[in-house]
Length: 266
Image 1 (cartoon, one colour):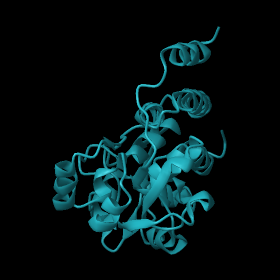
Image 2: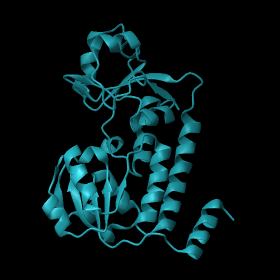
Image 3: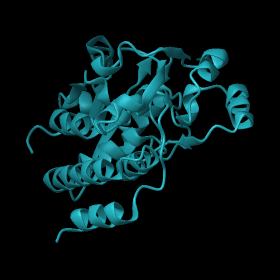
Image 4: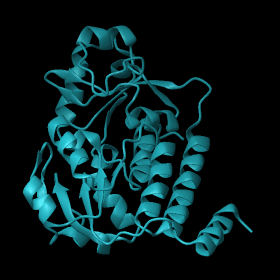
């Protein structure tokens, strides 16, 4: 018997620890996870930021990033909040604590942590079997990607978030871990800030072999520095999939697309 089915059997015998009926998600990535766990029926409200999954288009909104509508949230009478710390300002996070509503805080820094948190969210939703199954699938896909794209010497990659000013991702960002899955290394992985501002000079000094950005004009601007290895070798790579910005189950396939862009030879 596989470990997955053994775990499902044990949970079936013992029964779920948690039972909730009214869930409010305070981050799009967490809303997406609930949908991936086939548990959208438990959601009664969501925090908005960008396009919603089709299953959630008619749900009440409890605000937007940094602008939580506390009165509307309370009117929905949630018995569980799913929170990503960056989606709600510090003052309102303190307010939420004082309300004593059960809250699960998800802030994964690696793809393995993401898989584990998906399992935990499933437990909190009372749907543990689905979490075990989904997490197992995600881990298997990750292992396959690591094997396919592994390199003895990782590619040096500069991941550009924005150009004016110039922003990248630091060591604590899950995107840095996605790069490692692809056999690459974030050239600014030594910076502890999640989204550090860097200079062009710092990029030149670290001499990345690949530069990744989501805008072609931003990539073309690097052609002014032909001494950079990525420019000299024609390794200016466009990544348009926004899934890397949402740490939910779909991020594994977004990582697979990133790997294909960075290392199409694999």
